[in-house]
Image 1 (tube, each protein chain N blue to C red):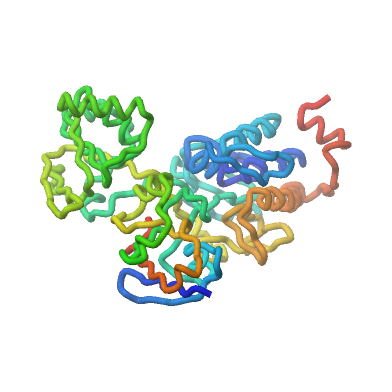
Image 2 (image 1 turned 135 degrees about the vertical axis):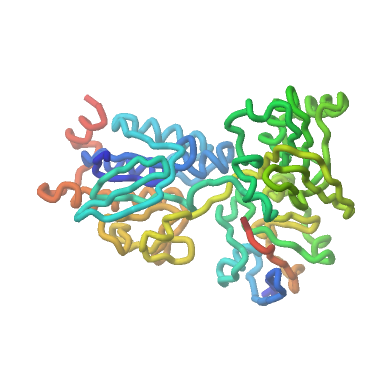
Length: 337
Length: 106
């Protein structure tokens, strides 16, 4: 079990700035996130879209903001546990123990939940047979393409992931690319490659249609798709791949005994602590009177929460408010001379 | 103020007055209408404010931008009359609009 001063759940902009606010106070933290990279919604939902309301930054993209925040917290050499989701939180006297789905355990007096709207997970197919075949013959991501050789593969989706995998897997498997409308959205080069392979009969494109059902007992035998005009077609299929992007799910957080208001966690607006001492919620996931879901509000929230984190992590020391401009101690922590 | 009717997939409906300039999604969120999640808060990034719009109203709405149509691909059971309610801005012309929420949003 790894000990630290604060466990931060969520590596979005607010979680990243929490590292900074804790760091300048001399507190160590670790960050856990279910995505494979830092940045949260900024990197997953709008990496290229502009943000205009970060103070003193007239315009930047989600990706740029993430990069700048990562640079700002570099001096603190924080450990990130990515691709991991927090499953369990339990109390151990004055500390909290957090366990992830990767069986990592952390112990700290403070937890800061900066979880946004929840963790990102693949959007799943709605047909009822989907669950039965999931991770065996039906996948929402490709982990081992060796297993997809010499198969009949049905790929659902109209975006880059669907198109890229259709191209890649068509080298050694039979591909049906299925989409709800005639237009695909992807890089022009990818689209022309797909059209070329369709002519060569290496990929067959089925549009506009959607999945109606999956048939099979232990293995998938066929799938049935339904066209917009009502016609259906049965297609022999071994493997189904589905690429409908990611959704945000609150997940196990809802079961930690925190006071919830719909999908948000209630906090006080003095230090953003929840009803559990030492568990804080900041950013989009917290609610209090007047809450605005803005990145800049999250920055303010972590600044205040970090003060209470200090008091809990260093009960024998007195907290001193300091400015980064004039504090020698803070500048040392930032590696400035 | 224009009246908007939110109907769920079982036929239960609620009609509320929504101020001009708000989106149909915001009208739902501010009035605790269930069936519209709006996880991303209206930045057209999540498709959890997905609604079906009755044909006669569908044709009166400003056409969906390409980015909205792309996002609808991700929605739960999209149909021809699918829209993202965060992109439907309430005006006097939309007085009486009926939208139906899908069985679920994700």
